[in-house]
Amino acid sequence: MCKYDYQCKLCGFKIDVKAEYKDMQDVVLKVSSDCPNLNPVTKEPIVLDAMYELMVPKEKSAVMQLREFHNYNFYDETKEYILRR
Ligand SMILES: [Zn+2]
Image (cartoon, rainbow, N blue to C red; front, side, top):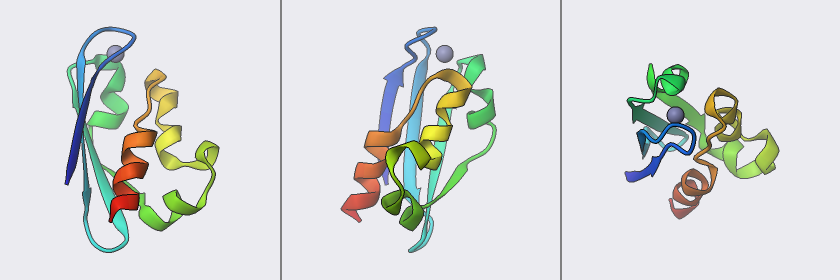
């Protein structure tokens, strides 16, 4: 498992992200924060296809899609975690 945290650049709330392999294929990303703007990503864990994340360019990554919610992304840390496995 891998954990990282940030301060929200837009509103100052702390954002905690936990990434964990569920099985050989899927990585589960759990985002928690009091930042109301992150509700769409904190409501439920995000399941990532690790192989997909490794193969697509950054702009197609599902992690990068999360930016839409709050101009925030966990791309570099998440990819690093996926690669370490
Ligand atoms: Zn925020």
